[in-house]
Length: 218
Image 1 (cartoon, rainbow, N blue to C red):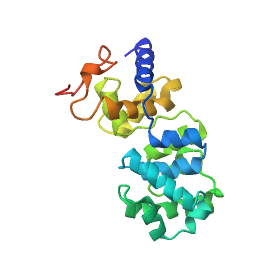
Image 2 (tube, rainbow, N blue to C red):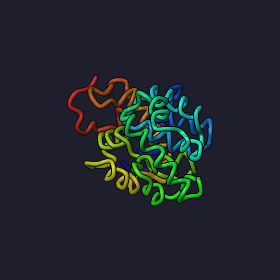
Image 3 (tube, rainbow, N blue to C red):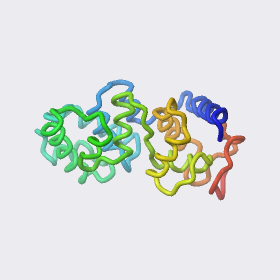
Image 4 (cartoon, rainbow, N blue to C red):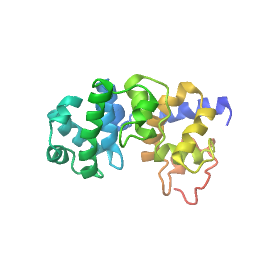
């Protein structure tokens, strides 16, 4: 895909997203520009539906909204607040550990570099890049299952893992699109370009998409 086609692709994704709900972490970032809340919300969102993540973050942040405040909560209090997010027991243990590291190593501030974010227990590249993008306004490509799947279907990349996709997109996608690419593709992937039987007949990207590895569609 050349630059003109990529520009058209992003434009159509934006048109397709018009009126649709953006991912819950993006909505939170638009309401409150708080890197800590974005970090914790992203951790909660992993393997969890948006509606569940939204309710869990509201309940948890009513109890505490700073690293110090979160450390005062018991594991049971956190567990009850975030249930039924995916792996809620593990996350109830992980969140205080992240907060302790923030307090002890980063003066209670969420770090603004990829290296430091990845040093936090349980924080991977997807979470770190989302914090950099939504929390600090840095150009970063956050690759989740939707971004990985759709980028390969479109032929933008030819990769086997999300990490490979991230690096390939850095070479392919103009930097001005890095941050919004995730938000647009998550919304698009939930509504149109689904994992199984994507809705190709109503897709605005039909003439741009070679449908790589798509075996059946509607």
